[in-house]
Image (cartoon, rainbow over all chains, first blue to last red; front, side, top):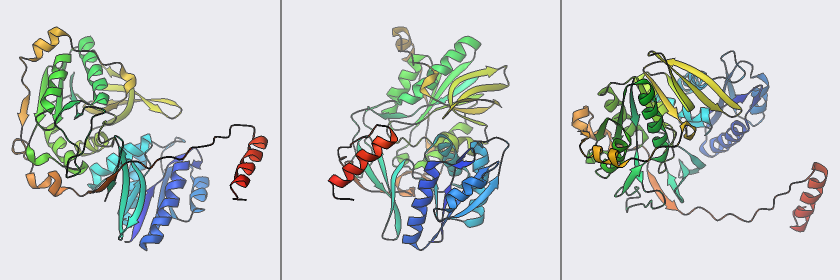
Length: 143
Length: 257
């Protein structure tokens, strides 16, 4: 496996907590899979957020986007598509925030990559990614 | 305006079951709750500003009952995509069927609910907008046409809401804040009996059956299990100084420090 990409989110100058958690997850999965971990951040001024994310170990890509403190989902999608085009990642991780749902859906529509939604855990089993999804009181293991 | 509401027929909430192949049983279905809020808003807009409301679903035979409820609530037309090959489709295949369906129907606004009670993915609306090339307005707590050419929504955010506007046709994904869905009236129920849903198969849509269903799915359920039981939690709510003392004491009691 080559690369894992996290679609990060910034709130103001800072990376969101979920972005840092996904960055940590990606670094761990990359180590298990012999891959590299990357995070793309889009925003007007994400310098501080970049430092925060990089402290967790992944390579950070920055896309200057928008004039607002909080870039819209479409700006994040544009940055994500550019990063996907550049890295051709095997796995893309998106946080299940409001913008994250919009971004993941848009990427499904535009890239036609398989999508596993609402994962509660992601792990490596037999060199493949398996995610846990919880629905109506049942935990699904899906690959 | 003509509004097309995408509606999913889901297993009766609380009685969801899996079959032997780990697929959700779909013997008894009802309208997805989140979608009913969009139907209600569409009906209100049609009643106040004129226009028509149509509904569309993709699902097996029991989904017809859910469509009848939508017609009884006031929808004027219903479209039912039904084909045995669709069973077991993953998100990507379902998206392909929805795209093909939407190409066959005219609309000014396309409405979709925020998520479903069975899958809970909440991504197909954005995917559909991307594939159809429509402006996408999500997490709407209010929807308001601006003349006949534009639509304005309040989009919920973590710290309030944004006001977004787009030209039509557009896809709006809405929330439960749009208003409580109405109950069908007896008159509506009677009227719905004379309204038949238009049925389409994959062949009618021009969708290759080999691209949908469990055979074509890129994702696979490999196991199911009940959620792990949670251990009892001790929540420390105090001033920082006191909280630190209590947490240190708790860790010390457990031999961690």
